Amino acid sequence: MADHSSADPSFSGMAISQVQCRVAIVGSGPSGAACAYWLSLRDVEVLALEKKVFPRDKTCGDGLTPRSVVALEAMGLGEFLATKHRYLGLRVVAYRRSFELPWPQHPNFPDYGYVVTRSELDHAVASRASEVGATILTHHEVVGVDQEGGAITALRVKNIDDDSLSEVRAQYYVLAEGSNARIARTLGVQRDRSEPMGLAIRGYYESPRANEPWIESHMDLRDSSGAIMPGYGWIFPLGNGRVNVGFGLLSNSQRWRSINTTDALSRFVEGAPPSWGLSPKTLCGPPTGGKLQMGHSVSPQRGPNYLVIGDAAGSINPFNGEGISYAYETGKLAADVIARALEKGDHNELDRFEELLRSQYGTYYRVARRFVRLISEPRIMGPAIWVAMRDPKLMGLTVRVMANLMRDQGKGVPEYLYDAVTRALPTSPKTAVRR
Ligand SMILES: Cc1cc2nc3c(=O)[nH]c(=O)nc-3n(C[C@H](O)[C@H](O)[C@H](O)COP(=O)(O)OP(=O)(O)OC[C@H]3O[C@@H](n4cnc5c(N)ncnc54)[C@H](O)[C@@H]3O)c2cc1C
Image (cartoon, rainbow, N blue to C red; front, side, top):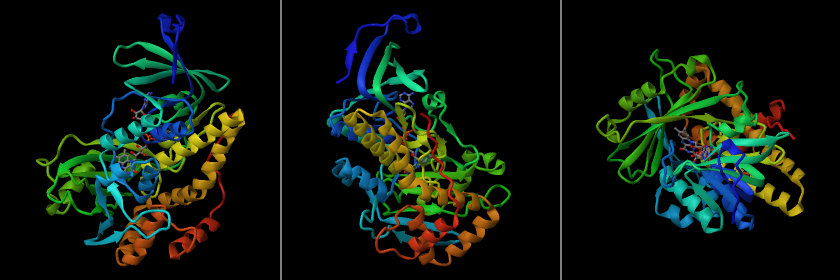
């Protein structure tokens, strides 16, 4: 457990307490809580600092794909998930057509997903991490960082309940603060602005179709001039009388950056099938939005004694805007690397984090970033969707690639096509390292 020791009067001129631990994590969303879970399971003393109190809301579509299901089950949350709304796949809607695409059969992933509010989901994962021994300190915000030679020497932490300050010192640090990543930015972690970013907004609506076993994506959304926008609208049933309705847009060109996402969401809601019952009357509260940093476009993801994970590292899949599973996965990778560094007493082990990210996601994200650049052009995106909507099989194969559910063994058309594309692309490692 964290050791609370004597006051140090040098910090901001006031008495503060000092806390020592092996690993300190900034943020306890999916990436931070997963990292805390996997470290604790290896008996590493870990302290995760979280500025909010669980259960807390987080702007999200609440959609869990089969990748997220696997990660949650691995953390012992299968029973929790089984009480939530399970769905079977994706209904794609565009150009007045629609069809249902069940999640594919896969040796490693289930053929179902869930829709769970983030207030329930993140509470469950953080609770699970504390069950196995992690200390999750909520209502504690990391407000600053002390550093020396690029390494973190202490985190400055404010207790939001009483405004008291403390200093947290650890052997290793993990930055899991989400997309705003104020602390990571202080350390020079930056998004590559030449890479695509997304903007998304969502609201909850009461709906008579809240128990549907399909999540729905509308792919032919248009701006006020009638041009197809590079993004999609979604309706995700929660099974509790409500649906999560949102709109996500790639914002890599000036044209799309200037789109007002609140207006775009309203237009989507107005044009949605009336059977969903979406209207200002069924809206449960003001919609909220956020940004999607994708394709590991944020770097460096490793400092001398810290790692950056989840949205803070730009881990979202550029193909579909999915970030929860990648937050869990990068949280586990960071835990594995840090646990080994502690075991061997060698901080150079942290170098492996970059290698692991590159081997697991490098090629896939390189293809995804290219894809995203292409479809940002309305003259490409419109016809591409039009063609895919005439061929459910083609669309099914595309979704398998976009959801990163391709098979290593028993490859099919999408895997072979994907392999051909990766061979055709030049190599350009995206992950930078700073020592
Ligand atoms: C509108 C929208 C819809 C989305 N829909 C989906 C979807 O349907 N499915 C999907 O898979 N992904 C979706 N995403 C992406 C997904 O929300 C993120 O990828 C995911 O939340 C990343 O987890 P994280 O732990 O990295 O960051 P976060 O979930 O942002 O967690 C960061 C945590 O750190 C805390 N924190 C931040 N700064 C500090 C600090 N200084 N001190 C202490 N605590 C701090 C925050 O309070 C927060 O709890 C969506 C995103 C948006 C914006």
